[in-house]
Length: 364
Ligand SMILES: *Cc1c(COP(=O)(O)O)cnc(C)c1O
Image (tube, rainbow, N blue to C red; front, side, top):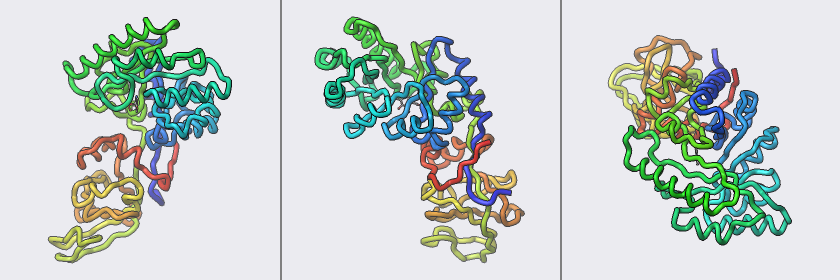
């Protein structure tokens, strides 16, 4: 019997995913374990410690603060920061994090700081834009980067790019163009660099869709947590997290009565409804309300009714005979976060990373 909402994280499943992914890539390809956004909601420090025990040697986060948390949790491995911001550069050096340089402004600021501190050979990575058009140097301004910024103060460990549509079935003209552009970048970088860096371009679905492009490293996030953005690829992985909560109140509602704010749901017949202590403040957004999201109670699928409140949501229990305190499963290994989010037209990434810290994490 569970007594409050909780996210149960299965460390055996994490190990299964890590080992499965490790076996899909070449022994000499580095697996960069992406533990940004608090380890996709699962607790970044805890996940990184476990992955480190399993043999992971390289980690990545989005922002410097996340790197600091991992360092404080005892993670000593190289740690990339994908999207360092100007305010975070001091922190990057303080915690020996490896920044990704993605434009001239951030590169110049970082190099000035190294000069000021008299630091040489600091490990950095270079991000290139091959079509996602988010951040990074494009092929056209790579030369000016190397002309202006390449100094003995930095050591360029890797040059990488990011796919925009890695889960799209092959052949995909857009992705092919990204790979082709990255090949041009690779040749140019090899000409410009005295000691050639490592190259990488694949994320989780990329590893499944394009194993032949794994190069020197792959950056794996969501697949460690059990998803690969395709039902077929998902089969080899195990979702590591289960979100569940006890039904903490049951009401009998007469036909015509309403449930929740703004009379979001009106009973068309005598009904039995259950209240669950999870709301939009916990990361279950309002888009799941009004009969969009489904949860699982004693093996039966029931509907979220009315508007999701800040701390609570309501389900229609009319067809399920269950006592107060029964566990309602929002998602688990069978009824996955991917299934749950599909109902509201979003993706597993979003719900996992939105789960608020007030949800108790339990590790098994
Ligand atoms: C988040 C991120 C990844 C991991 O992507 P997944 O799809 O979760 O594997 C890889 N590379 C970059 C640059 C990212 O921002």
